[in-house]
Image (cartoon, rainbow, N blue to C red; front, side, top):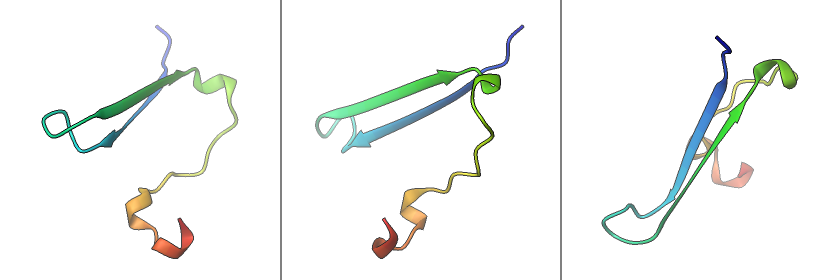
Length: 49
């Protein structure tokens, strides 16, 4: 069995209130160099976004 890393993100007001866009990526972890941990963008200060 092959282990994959999968990431999902969404943007929009939500499916009930208006348009929404979602994206997903599946990647073989051996095909890419190690990444540093990813923080939520909402946790960053507005000046650093």
